[in-house]
Image (cartoon, rainbow, N blue to C red; front, side):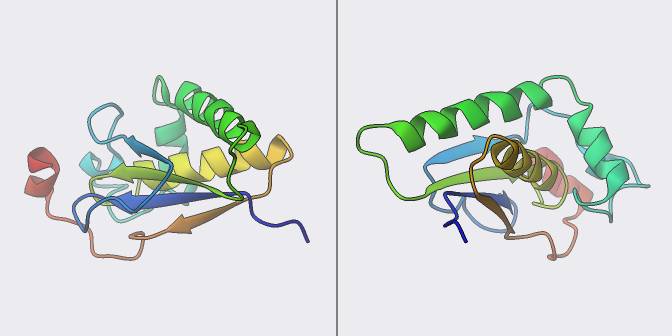
Length: 135
């Protein structure tokens, strides 16, 4: 079994600070938030409706492609480490960060790089609506 070279970590800034990572993507202000749709609020980025909503947002697929390229560059750098950590954060860590982290890991696997996903906050309670304007 090949060692995991990349771990994509989803998280929510509303629960705790960003985890230690080589690359941290803050997607709170740049992409549509499924939390604002009552039909998706209690789902996660692993649910097809949320995943489609996030991945269909303009700019998300390009972000995944660019992050994949950056990871490959880090893995091939002269002082490369054994593992690259990519953290993707949204407000609650249930929607955008999950779908994007999954997308990054899938793109890396397609590129032949062994990648895994860790969803730090996916099972935490949904944050109150006001939290999303404050963070």
